[in-house]
Length: 405
Ligand SMILES: Cc1ncc(COP(=O)(O)O)c(C=O)c1O
Image (tube, rainbow, N blue to C red):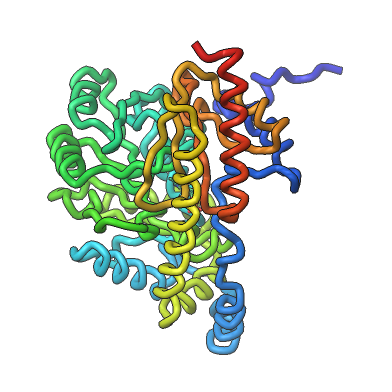
């Protein structure tokens, strides 16, 4: 019997869909006695479970079969209008309901963007480091990545300009998470947003603005979306209900003002899943449009702020002096840099001491920087956070005897 080789059985693009060794290592850390800062999960105890149960009953009573029927690819009208109104209120600039497409998680949005823009070998520009899920979504379309360095204010415009001036072939888009970035927790300053939009407009480079965390701000004031700074429709804005309501609903949205891009994305979505679950959209809208939702979002932000504070304090008290970490003004993540360390090695030590994080290397498209790590602060109690950070500090100290230079 002859068996087909991998190359003959599967599409070439699957060669890039690697099972991550880190993910395998992290499986060990899912045991209940391990304090995990590795996941990117919202706090389940803050899910509005009762309110969603009420909304579900209400939807069934009021809409019945309509909420169970096939629907249009763009999303149910009430959801598109809700998204446009919310974005308009938040950013003080008009967002149109016709520009909104409801997607099954912003992760699907990223996949669809990859599908409509990327051929094999095309360039995508992204920050170094970037959201791992975006790299995974784009990887399936076999692009190459041009990375731009970041500092405490996020992506550096001069570095972006230098990359664009030399890029060959010219990139298809820039991917950026401007608010409380996953993985670093950093926020792109207002001045930088303006500069980056101006550069991209000059080069006619589309911007994919991925904003799942912007509503979880603990302090400081909201910054304008890059979509509202652009004078031409070069920005594809991605938002999601995952962090402000519940990720299991898989209700998220794209706002795309360029008609041609939007039509292509909608067609790609039609081929992928016809539409996002009608039922989930109805239930999401029922709760989100009600009076209690705003207070719910504030409650999440307050709880996460307390967890961030607990983590920052524990880091200040326990970390060796050369270890640096970000001070996020919102979101769910914090970034730690340990000069000279390989944080994949550190994870092994940490697993023995029953604490986990994600090694930073996963977030670098070229997998070439090893001294960073991502900590999630939304999914553990303040007490566990303090204990976990103590364990992390002990592990770093023991690593320093072996691999720190
Ligand atoms: C930056 C970023 N984009 C997109 C997503 C995916 O979110 P969703 O649940 O809407 O698919 C995440 C999830 O963690 C994220 O951190």
